[in-house]
Every structure is written in structure tokens, then in C-alpha cells.
Amino acid sequence: MHSRFFPILLLLFSAAIFDVGFAGAGDVSGENPFTPRGYLTRYWKKEISTDVPMPGFLLEKASPLTAVEFAGFSKLADQRKLSSQLPDFCGKANLLCFSDLSPSLEKHDTNANFAVYLNKNFTNYGDNRLGGLDSFKNYSDGDNLPVDSFRRYSRGSTGHGDKFASYATEANVVDQSFNTYGTSATGGTGDFSNYNKQVNVPNLRFTSYSDDSNGRKQSFTAYTDEANSGDQKFTSYGKNGNGAANEFASYGKDSNVLGSAFTNYGETANAANDTFTSYGTNTNVPENTFKNYGTQGNAATESFKSYRDQSNVGDDNFQSYSKNSNAAKVDFENYGKSFNEGTDKFSGYGNGAVGQEIDFKIYGVNNTFKDYAKKGVTFTGLPNGSSAMGASLVATGKRVISKWVVEPGKFFREKMLESGNIMPMPDIRDKMPKRSFLPRVIVSKLPFSTSKVGELRRIFHADDENSTMSKMLTDSLSECERAPSPGETKRCVTSIEDMIDFATSMLGRNVVVRTTENTEGSNRDIMIGKVKGINSGKVTKSVSCHQSLFPYSLYYCHSVPKVRVYEADILDPKSKATINHGVAICHIDTSSWSPGHGAFISLGSGPGKIEVCHWIFENDMTWAVAD
Image 1 (cartoon, helix red, strand yellow):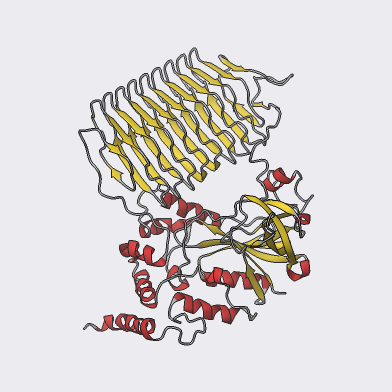
Image 2 (tube, helix red, strand yellow):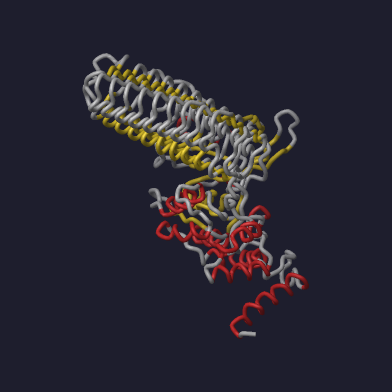
């Protein structure tokens, strides 16, 4: 046997012996000391000066790898070969990884009816089909981490109908792409009835949608309604189309922190008829971007009947709108009427157009219109004394009550933490996928910076830079590299040992970590039972740690000065039975917070004027000096 293999075999053999025969040796917890959890238990005892053992909720986040698995994957990390064993590594280490696409379901000649569909890859689906109808029902509904790809879907078809009845409803961390959907199709229909409703962290991509089509009608009845935190992108929508009719009946309604991008929408199309009936209504912090909308279109009709109505802050950006078009009619009946103003920018629309007619009837506050055509554009209902010829149009209007104004119980005043008080509790359930930390020995060998994101993408099989995994890696790394806010000390921790180090560096070794016991009481009224102020209720400093979306557990931890931390029994208001034990943190100094912070929207005040309290949600935690 070659000598260089001996150390590896010895390590694996030793680990196996400890796995089988010596579990619990030297560790009162009963954990094998050569596992990641065994090492972490010893690290806690060494670094934390209190006699309190590591709480179960924190130990549960540690890596579940056995000693043998730990040794094997550590060696693969040394050799930069983890990618070759990614499915096995992800499964055993409890990581968030997407499955590689399955073999493609290719062309077919007869009508297809997929009643239950999950994680499939269609490379050439419905190409050059003549007539017929293909139906998808219950498509990836309720699935965790669905990865679906349609490439060259209905391309060159004639009179062919596509129907998606329930597409990825209530799915979690969705990654779905349609490349060349309906390209060069003639006639026929495409119908998405319930597209990604109530999904969490979607990443949806339509790369080429209905380009070069002729007389094809496509409809999205309910598109990403009630979605939470993600992005959707249409890169080339209806380009060179002829007589196409596209309808979005309900687009992104009631969604939270959702980004939408339409690039090259309706470019050089002829007689297009596009309707957005309800676009982004009642959304929270939306980010919408339309670039090159209707450029060089001929005789197009574009209608936004209710655009971003009753939305909370966010940003919209329309660039190059209806440029060099011919006899286009664009109608915004209700544009951006929000209860809490966002930022809306129109740059370069209608320039070079001939015979166009653009009408804005109702629009919200803080709208900026630049470089637009001075003829054929109508602004209806301008406030008295306003002029449509200026660079900026500011309209005032009655603020509308929205569910985003009052998110019951998410923020509250300190006086509410009194025994006997009844108050609403928000949904404190963790909606992120379940993951574990990696052992520090392994994670220290993985790149962790935006400059090396390419290597991370290779490890986690994120070949497509637009995929959910790629975006997840880039977004989290960028947030970790962001400069701290004034007075903030922050660190992204990639292991529990790192978290312990950061907390003790800020607070000392005499610390206790707490979280809310469970999720009981979410989304309903609760009664406050016995309340205890940590450190006798004195103003103190704490370290709060919040989850980030990453393949393994990653926490954003930051030092929070001038807070009071409380523990409170949570009771059922009717039976008075204890259903939960909550941890709440009250921020005494809010002077550096943004005036548009949700706390001030719901509590009706401003920076530095009031204290703001909130519960510690599931899987988040706060560290404080022990009593």
C-alpha cells in the first residue's frame, strides 16, 4: 500500500472505532467527541464561563455528520473535490442544495395531461406541434426546492394550446425557467391560471417569451400572488410579435419584497395588445424595472389599469418607454397610488414616437418623469398649479389603508409587555429551508467572498449564473460584505464556534443565548403572562443573530446597543394556559432608523421618538450578559 494513503485510512479507522465503540467517551452529553457536535460541546464549555450548558435549540443547528463522514468530507474539502460528492454531502450534512436536472422529456405527438408534476426537465416540449392541447395540473405544488426547466417550449407550433392550472403553488425556494416559450408560434393559447401563488423566495425566469409569435394569446390569471421575497424576470417579452395578446390579470398581488424585471418588452412588435389589470397591488417594498418597453412598436395597445396601488414604499423604474413607436396607445389608469410613498422613475418614454397617445389618470406621490415626449402625453388630475412640462411631477392623494400598514404584533411598545395584556402576535414561524451549520474545519476551507463566488458556484453545481443558487450565494455574500450601519458592529458567522466568538468578543464570556421557545400563538391574539426583564430590566447591550439564505446555516450577527431584553410567558387568552415562552427585545434608541421603517408605519411615530419592541422569531436568537 502506498504510504500517502496511510494517514487517511488511519483517520477514518480511528473515527469508525469512536463511532462504534466509544460514543460518549469524555463527553457528558453522550455525544461522540470526534463528531462536530462533540467538538462543539467542548468548545462551549471552554469559551462560556457560565455553568449553563449549551441550549438544545443551538446544539440542534450543529452539523449532524458522524465522525467517519466528518473525516471523509474534510479530506474532500482539502482536495477541492466536494463538488464530486455534492448530493451525498448535502444529504448527510443537511444542507440546502438543488437537485441537478433530470433527463429531458423530449418531443411528443399526442396530447399530454400531467396531473402531478415534479422536478422535470423539458428540453424540446411541444416544438412544431400542430393543434392539440397540453395540460399541466398540480405542477410542483407544495414542494421544497423545486427545480424545473422548460427549454424550447411550444416553439414553432401552430394552433397549439398550453394550460398550466396550478403551477408551483405554495412551493419553497423555487427555481424555474422558461427559455424560448412560444417562439415563432402561430395562433393557439397559453394559459397560466395559478402561477407560483404563496411561494417563498422564488427565482423565476422567462428568457424569451412569445418572441416572433403570430396571433397567439397568452394569459397569466394569478401570477406570483402572495409571494414572499424573491425575483421574477422577463428578458425578451413579445419581441417581433404580430397581433399577440398578452394579459396579466393579477400580477404579484399581496406579495412581499418581490422584484420584477421586464427587459425588451414588446420590442418591434406589430399590433400588440398587452393588458396588466392588477399589477403589484397591495405589495410590500416591491422593486419593478421595465427597460425598453414597446420600443419601435407598431399600432400597439398597452394598458395598466391598476399599477402598484396601495403598495408600501419600494422602487419602480421605467426606461425607454414606447421609444420610436408608431401610433401606440398606452393607458395608465391608476399608477402607483400608494399609502406610503415609494420612488417611481420614468426615463425617456415616447421619444421619437409618431401618433402615440399616453394617458396617466391617477398616480401617486414621489413620481419623476424625465425626457418624455411633449406631444401626445396626457396627465389627468394634476394638483392645482402643477405643470406637466417640468422634469418632476409630484402628486398628492389620499392615503389608503393596506395590510402592510398594520402588520399585527410585528412591532409593539414596551408598555405592552405587562402581565394580563392581550395583544396580537405575528407569524414568527421560520419560512426558510431547514439547514445545519457546517463544522468550522470544513467551512474554513470553502471560499466566502463575492470575489470567489465562481468557485462557490462550482462547488454547489450552480452553472447558471441566473439560478436561485447563484443569486442566493451572491446576495448573501454581498450583504455580509456591506459596510456596517452607524454604531453597528456586525459579522456573518459560518459556524456556531464563530457565533460564540463574536458574542463573547462583544459581551464577554459570561453570556446567555435565548430564543422564543416555539411558534405557538402565531397569527392570533395572545395574553402576556409572567414577565422577566433580563439584567433586572436595565438598558444593556445584546448581540442579535438572524438567518441568511445560504446552502449551509449562515447567520448575520450584530451588536445592538441600548436595548432591554425580556422573557415572557405567552398564554392562551381563553384558557389562560401557557402555550409559549417568548423572548422580546426593545430598542430604546431608534434615532438612526429610517423614517420609512415598518415600525414607524405601524406604530405611527418616527426615528428617536419612541422605543420599538419585537419578538425573537423562530431560529433567530439574542445573546446578553448573564444575570
